[in-house]
Image (cartoon, rainbow, N blue to C red; front, side, top):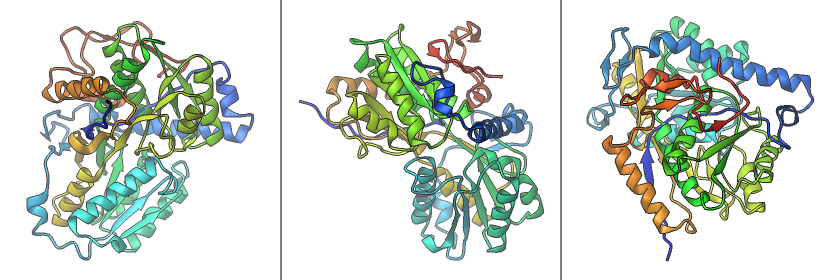
Length: 425
């Protein structure tokens, strides 16, 4: 008899990369439009520039909470329930800047739902949230106009939900010291930073896929978007989870070079399936990859939100972003006037989670994943423990050591069982 497991809560961020596969080469997936090519390049460049902008700051972030030597205050993982009880949130206004629409089924929806969840927990009326959608994170004028509009409408807190905004928001924040600006991604001067330790959830997902796949094929797939730090995190953690299940496991990556493109994502998933892969991870928002898997008798780990309803016969489990605990803390500290632009959140716990496993996933696999989750929580198993090598043969972490938060966040590498044509500069 098979059962549906309880929700697995974990932590993390999320990652990406790409590979030229038969039927899904970089040229084929990207299309033949020069405009599309320029857009892809700009988006990837924007994200990587955001990483570079925060690299010096992140390097001194302490892993145990508290203030670092650089002045960055890493907020410890704790609830704000006690202090929140004494705060009047009735007139507290929140501004939300999204790169796409909030019902995209992916990243924007996960962020938006997390804000609403935090507001609901704190008793803040939904009317107090002003959401601006489809603000291009490569267009400085659009980002500046959106931020200034939210300031003019009296927002106390403005949340930028794309790393691309980090290039433009500090200037606006400096001119409006009474407003707190929070930015997803690596820590940037002048902005509250927030991240999730997504790698633990994706490690479990890769472990589950390899347990299911290894009797047929030790090669898994990963259908991804851009060669960007959060996407690299997802791919690497997924690959390391697979390797934990089977030392011979490999992960082949295909890239759509887009954050949301049904046609390209369909091509990527199909190319992986055509190469003999039956189990894959994904970093995308559209329903294309789950639906393609279901049509071909393949299986996938959903991403951003629970995707089981999109392809109930194909989605094994989904990785879900849950920013609500972090947003709850940021909102409370902003209302209390204790929030500062030096604050940095890098939280685990319930912030990243796996949804319920599908009913068709065998009980023994679910139990093994649950057991591994417990080992991660206790520290018995470390995702980025040495010896760990990249896919160029370089030693990333020596035997007996664990990778620093700085390097985990940056993800300037692909681990040795990832097969991709992408490189990291």
